[in-house]
Amino acid sequence: MKTTQELQTIARQIRRDILRMTTAAKSGHPGGSMGCADWMTAMQFNIMDHDPATFTMGGDGQDMLFVSQGHITPVIYSTMARRGFFPVAELATFRRFGTRLQGHPSTEHNLPGIRMASGSLGQGMSVGIGAALGKKMTGDNHLVYTLHGDGELQEGQIWEAAMFAGAKGVDNYIATVDYNHQQIDGSTTQVMDLGDLRAKFEAFMWTVVVIENGNDMQQVLDGMARAKSLTGQGHPVVVLLQTKMGYGVDFMQDTNKYHGSVLSAEDLEKALAQLPATELGDY
Image 1 (cartoon, rainbow, N blue to C red):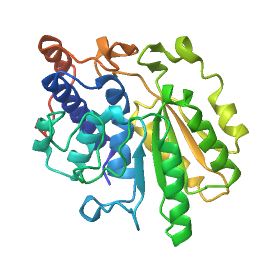
Image 2 (tube, helix red, strand yellow):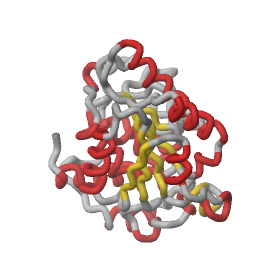
Image 3 (tube, rainbow, N blue to C red):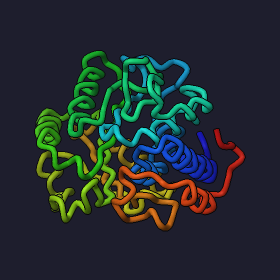
């Protein structure tokens, strides 16, 4: 277990990794990755009961995580590397042809930590529910987690899955929505207003936890601990994680501009100046 301060340091390093990876590749999705860095760090290092050394695709005897909005591979890969799933130096191969670190997660190369080829939005909740039901069938008391973009909730498959999980009492499952109010074409309000997400999930018999500031490490830790405490009570749990897209760099925050656009070399230097180097070191 890491202290809150240690986790904050790791998250800052991960943000440095995200920006350096995407700028070097000249492609990728830095904005959502930056916003999710605190949650991903907390999950990998403190919240989840899992061990990179004993990773298996089946996930027996460990918590499982499926990231449904697979385009945020910069934060996925950086966090996994920093957690020990594969060498940190491999981050330098991000998005290169034929490498394990493709732009969207791939199971083709058996990259430890990846159990789902994701990025075709709307599918992760169905996968997570299936994995959770599988654990119930085998008597495995570990939990299944999924992460979703808020724009992803405009996919109909999400609500079919949500209805199923509530109706069937899939209570070993926690879904988290990265609620940053931004998507590729603008704000979620402009594109397709999501309305009252809390009321919608509660109507489908879910228990809802709200983390008001998903970029505050202590709030993330407390909120996810509360979500875990609410499992096993007959209802799936959803966490509404309110974050800022591009968090950590002032000119990247609260805009969809960097959903799928990367920084120039000049802007990268400006951004990294706002994210001081850590003792973990750049790859």
